[in-house]
Image 1 (cartoon, rainbow over the protein chains, first blue to last red):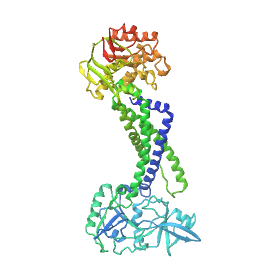
Image 2: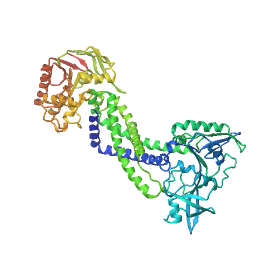
Image 3: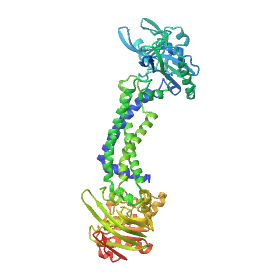
Image 4: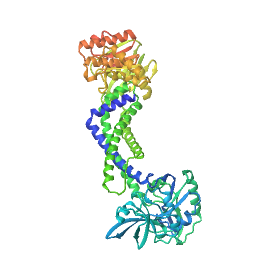
Length: 414
Length: 221
């Protein structure tokens, strides 16, 4: 039966070349857009180096502090003091790291202005992340404890600052300090916002007083990473953290309530869609989601219309099939199979197109060091989109068709 | 085999109401070959469509082998059509995108059957109607008479007990018409298939065992 359906599907596609072209164009364009978004989202949130241990990592980033009067502060607002006192002391994670987000800055060297992102980290940062060292190594826990003037830089900064030469042991001047370069790592895309920087130095070099008792950490924001032995430890880690928060001090005096969580990447991503205490960029993601929905809906409506026209053109065939024993459900199945076949063809075409576009994008340097690819996750998600699109645009026409009496269908669907 | 009791069919639009069939009581016995005659628009095709469960009567009962089928749902009706009834239409109603043999296989794809067996039965049906050399052709490569033979092969491939033919020779010349009629007679006589045939042609009607005449939606004989 399936062979018969597939045979018919191809015949119909070849018979109505204009309809087929319009359908394929709509499907291709929509899926292409979705594949590109999926590739970008996958690159930003999937387990891409140096964040290869994402599946075992929890992060504490966003949160909310509420005052007695009910006003509140939200965002990535916690201080190093908070993280050192209430996070670093957790016993359930295998490793705990505290770092700042990157801070954009410039340095002037030999008449050159070099833009860079600087990040303050502890030694555990290098153990949780999987950086690829081109030369040298990371700084140690002792060097972090002693706020040694040492640094890790990326390949781009090395090339701009030192020329294309080995940099380990060389001195890099930043903010009137002389940092000895310990290691050089491969560049990281800015889409990987947690590990991204050009220059990494020990925590103590930050202007923020790490020991000053305050909950709010200030610009550029701080976060903690908790590496678990396995995902099965997540509930225990989360519970221990919440337990700590029960007895928290409020050194500022004005706050009385704190809300924050240790979340996996998936949870953090999901939170962006449903604004709550942890997210203040929720509305942006909702707008993005809305745009995606509209983008998918419009071609789907168009395809529904085309499919209805196609169905009425084939009313006689439907009548014949009904007369010879096809039930409405069988015919609905046939029509869905046909529709899924055409959307899968559109899906494959759009994956090929997306591969070409991503290749051009990757070589264009629009987003430095960002290599968007169609890996198996993107591929499967795209296929999922195609099948979903095929079903959505096929169900209504199939339902309409199934309501025809055989005699009506034989007479041309009138 | 087929019983119609008090059948009435009314077509309603916003402005007018047309009665296509009124108070039809009819019995067709197993193995009978019956023709239905009457002027154009008298309700012959509507009657055949109701017998074949392709259309629903406005009032009245349709019984197939003494089972009242009026209230059957879509799936049961589809199964009944598939197992018991074969249709032959004036305008052939073949699927142009499918080859001759694929068209003939159509009723069998809605039964659980291995592909090989289905193909064997379809080829055997085509052999019976004398079209075994045209199995790979497409309908638009055949003459009218050949297309109707394909339609007959499709109607008989599932070995139904009833064949309903709506002016099967209407689009054919007299020579081809006679050939088609001979095939129907053979099916009736050799296999005991119950056949109800709508026709305008008295010469064909004479060959049937009984003629039902309709006029303005009512049975007159």
